[in-house]
Amino acid sequence: MNFNWFDFSGYLKIFWQFSWLQWIIFSLLSNIFLCLFSITLYQFIEKTCRKELLQEQNHPLTKSDVYLSFLTVVCNSFVMLLGVFLWKNKWIIIDSQPSVVSVFLETIALIFLMDLLMYFFHYAAHLPFMYKILHGKHHEHVSTNFLSLFVLHPFETIGFGLMILALLMSYDFSIISIVIYLLINLVWGTIGHLNREFFPASFDRLFIGTTRFHNQHHLDETKNFGFYTSIWDRLFGTYR
Image (tube, rainbow, N blue to C red):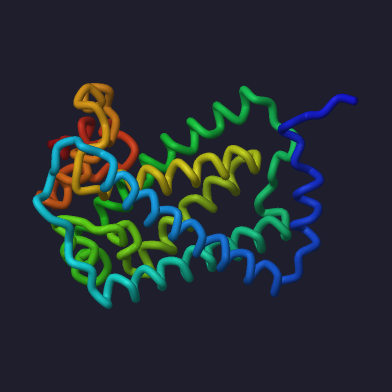
């Protein structure tokens, strides 16, 4: 019997039959799990990595950090539910039988397209009016802690989610490409908010958005707005 490891039609049928209550529970539990995974990964790297410290100490954990992180989890759950609504109403079409090549190319496309969109979104968040309302709280973390990735204004979280949904509406991505991209996004965000360099120094020359690259943004808010790469900062003159 032939078995296609990239045939997810059966799983999608199961999810299609979920009630909205089941979707609400699933979205909350999965986003809580992803948040806990990020925290665990951060702590593991902090304890095992012996590379250069970028900041002498982590940002102290506050009640505000915990509160905003919880809101981020709720907002991410809302974005997932919105994505389900768009999927059920055929605004988003998911390819359930992709090839290995298409999964690879789609994942790369999502990374580069989201990196470009996030650059402009991040740059706009630093405009004086937007910064004061939306993004300033995140930058109170000049040094970072294990919740810094999640210390965001709800509108930032939802805005990021809407950009992803817009891309998913524009092309029939496979579910595996979407999942791989979202995992890369979570891991990259966690590593980017460490207080010690994670990547080899040579990665800076490869246009990759390293830990030091994002750490420099927390030190100098006028530079390094990219996320996965430094391409757009180099192109638009905001690279440090």
